[in-house]
Image (tube, rainbow, N blue to C red; front, side, top):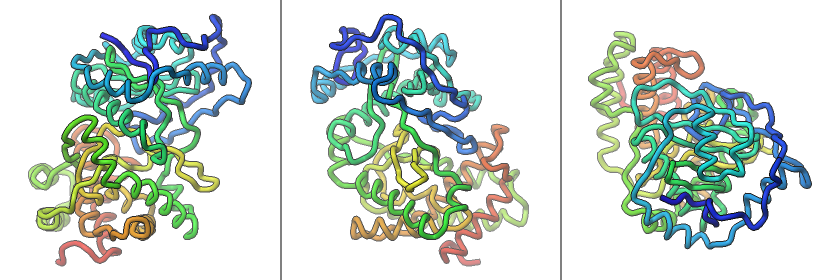
Length: 399
């Protein structure tokens, strides 16, 4: 099987060759701070600094950018791929070996693997690493995880070929044997609860404007058509839990006096989402740690992790915003600017219905898995905070 570099076959020689003894100029990267694999929202992410023009690092970047075939040709290559392979584990040695097979020019650099969360479900046997503080490589070590990674590779290829305004990281390599995605690391920081909480109203409005611009571009009808034509019919992404799962399993994790309210929320969610709006292409997992920001401006520099993307109503991509800060102001600012761009007002009832499934589902699986909730909270605290958000927006079932 072949592995394909974005623009050139990875096993063909580069038009510009790297020095045979390129110095390893990796920056000190916090191993818990890499973007690119659905990083734990409770972990702060930091991006490495890019090299200055004229340095060896820039020479390496220039060499990787060399392209001799069109993106359309790459699309034809990818569409013919029927077999996938994956790494044996998440070790540095396995990652280096995979790079040696697919893009050996990067295999000699420093590799910092994101530690991730220990998961028994093979669906989540996926990770990422930073190479020389300049590139991000995403990989998998199970079939299910490799299939998800390959799905994301196809999404990135179809979007990156024609949608420069979506602020995607630059694709360096898409490989099926083994499944790898290599992109250029984007300098910046995530959008955290603390960052939003410390912002003044004008800054929150600016953050909302940036998010709305991205979402309005992503949700254009032609984007769904483009992706569907490239990879086929898209499924609707799913939140962390369904109302049936919450009814069956949430009771041990919340207070007895909260359980009736949670069940009323489930009934309300079922009613609200019985009739959803027209499907658009959605990112599917747009929390702050899948975003790369220049907070000095503030400006959204890149959005990563499209493996949960699919086709569903636009409100699904707003589902994390109600909890992105100590108030719902960012949600309202984003919705207002989104309306300006699309002439469509996001349905806040639908946003909050998806948010209930997201927040309670996240609390449920983490509690059952013995994984700490982001920010050190508890499920009962999350229920109280969720209730306060519903009250602030004047939505949800009335007692």
